[in-house]
Image: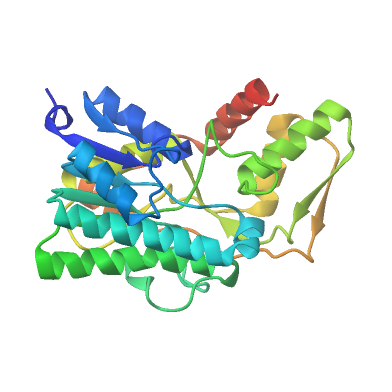
Length: 312
């Protein structure tokens, strides 16, 4: 018998990329009363749908993963939607969780909330020291407001909401759509296609000189569940691997693992996004014992294998 066997749990976004791994992690921990609201049944941007969800599920724990997300292109194309949908979903889910007496609310935010020029490695204390990178600021700020709301509700109502800040995720089951994918699935799709069709040249956005950090999706799911079990403080917590890589080196590694031996052409007319991105992950280890386990090369290999198997 685990702590989860006794809890009624809602996982918003539980049918999505990260959500499916969080649900699997909960099921492995013997969570039986688990509700995953589907878009077709509950539009979580609408107050009435949230009230109906809480009335039906009677949750004691809510893990909020549902989000409207995408890469730089999608963020540039839909800044209004990315701000409104993410803000209104989170704000109302939190408010009605409070009203329904939910015991714990887990907010899964984003590394995009950090200022554009944050000293590396990003420390949670740096979160308010500037404006986010412009291309994803509406999304990053919408998520950041949920941290403010959580801390305000803790102060006024004693409401137990925690905030987690995961870095860019990747892994089997990621979004490989050409218009909304992030950098790893976008590069995998391009290189696998090039190998299959005999292309000798692949193009990629930006200069490739910026850096990123990536966290394997299974590690992220485990971190979220550990935080839900063991962490009850107002301060946000970074979730990452602590490893920084330039996009040029990332592209070279993915090309090698995909078996692509042609030329990679960079398009400097397209934006790079944030100059550097790497987290200080010490708080997660100190507070709830999380450390990333998956090696980057092996994680990429598994992701490429999954994509090749599901490409059609």
